[in-house]
Image (cartoon, rainbow, N blue to C red; front, side, top):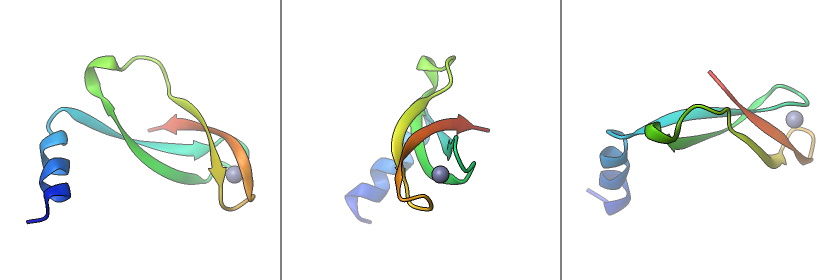
Length: 62
Ligand SMILES: [Zn+2]
């Protein structure tokens, strides 16, 4: 098994997968992981939106 896959499995035990959606066009462009213990605030990151071809703020969605 490739090393990267086994590491993902291990992180799955303690990290939560979250989806990031563009606040402009509402499309869900990214998924990322977050440590569950540091939860609370909603994540907001400026990322490239491939649909609009520009950088926009992406926010965590459920
Ligand atoms: Zn967008």
